[in-house]
Length: 500
Image (cartoon, rainbow, N blue to C red; front, side, top):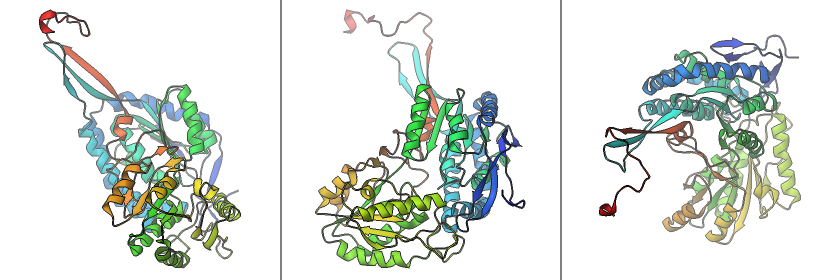
């Protein structure tokens, strides 16, 4: 049992905080200390039913609200996010383990998305095209889908929900959101900004709980028209199968195994800076984290010694301490999973250059930055997502082999090449199978006004960020107006021989 002083939170349905129907709660653990931070509802299908009913009831009024007015709610929410940024970031850092500097960036990304999404209230463009008939016009308009189910991961508990929820709202949909159970409080504070900004009751409802209970009920609910999910590829497949049977629209943002290609002419210092940040920022707990370093030719002689020395020197500790460079992993289970991958890599012949040992002095779920050299093509560490501060180093002869290695994994989210050769850079951009390619920059660092997403097992083709989600969260409706006063029949061969 949690100590009595631990704060308890509620679901939020139809503008009111509500106890879970089960009466059960789950503990949220501080990954830096291993202690209980808070208690959140362990919701089940009954809570989801209430939330979906609330969203369904709120939909007609919200959908008929002019899109610019919906956008103005998001602008007001952005102002509140700006005012509360540090407070939300501190909660986020404490519950997820992200360094405070990075936690502020997480909230800032939601703030940027709010400004962008709010402005889309005046840009939900349709199209016009000439009719094939006289005195007739046609155009398209965008209409909302209905109730959208949102399921998000713990590693970006504010930024990623903003990518989904804000576009869905400005398009006129209503939302039921299940945040990740590992880091729910910062998400609740993000949602509170929207409610305080004047979002009507029932337009955004939040239910907390485990994915296999609360999340599964949301996925299966017959009144949810669309689902958007960020998480593992394995769970994404199950979600897509369930939603596909009901013909629901689904957007999946899944795993990554992101490579950095270091060419012989790369700037060594810049490359080391980029790989360190890409591999060990957020303790490697990003879907875009640099998981593989592909060394071309002899470039490793100029890069690896400095990279390993600096990785060893990175300081682990309390993510709110400004001198700390790597925070904890989110849970004991996640740390065990990461360490298991390192042990597998060693059994399969990789050479450990640094890290790879479980700390014994820290009370939290820390894991040291780890670099393994001479990882074999096709091995477990070369192919599978680790989601921790572990870098697999592979060595190749030339750019062609480097691109082949980059492409041989089942994922295709982010990628990078460090080179001074513009021709090599553009060959990599053209040939690497990924949704994102950076040149002379690490694999992490999405910007809110550009599409984000990947290919292959990284998702199902949709994108978040920028202009892309407004396509997903709306239906196109085609409108024809015939002002000829006569019956004109389209798609009929009625032009006569003179017009042929």
